[in-house]
Image 1 (tube, rainbow, N blue to C red):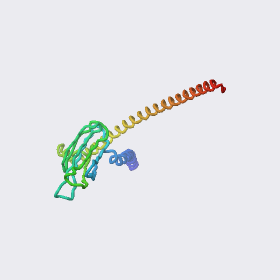
Image 2 (image 1 turned 180 degrees about the vertical axis):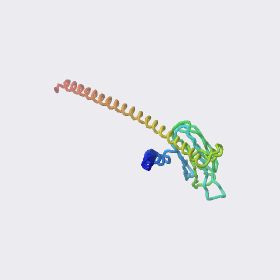
Image 3 (image 1 turned 120 degrees about the vertical axis):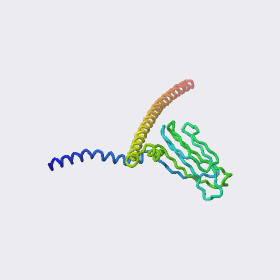
Image 4 (image 1 turned 90 degrees about the horizontal axis):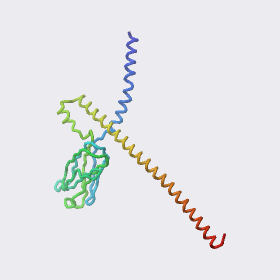
Length: 226
């Protein structure tokens, strides 16, 4: 009976071993592959514009809060904000504000740009410090509202978060694979064009050299040098 029990334990342990590398892989991939929140601190000069950008794939939720940080509580400076998509579409535009929020779902893949510039009349010639809390993907979800609405908590809520994390990793991997395929296609087309250009250049050089030889031969025959 002890032998059978030990065999069963060894078989159970053997079945559990393959799951350990998978769990270890997920442990390292989840923080890297999942779109997460990011806090950004900007010092906007009195004149000019400062921008932040992030490359985001399509159908991703983006949520951001921005707030002016000022030591002078008497006179609060104001800023203007403009957020654009990779194709230049205006997603958010506010002027003369001290704080705000923008949220949208991406429609196309590419770099999304958020630009900030200061209102010089509101603060003189001093830089304006802005704190930006930028969240994308699963980090932008309101898990407290989801848990309250679906009446889940504890382990079940953590499992839902892990499911969302796995889906985010899967979508990100597909996006990277598609981008790699697009870049490979562009590279192959570029190499083909360079090859044709090289052949064409070589043909033109040979033709010009032949014409030069013919011209010099005719010139020397006219001068009776050969």
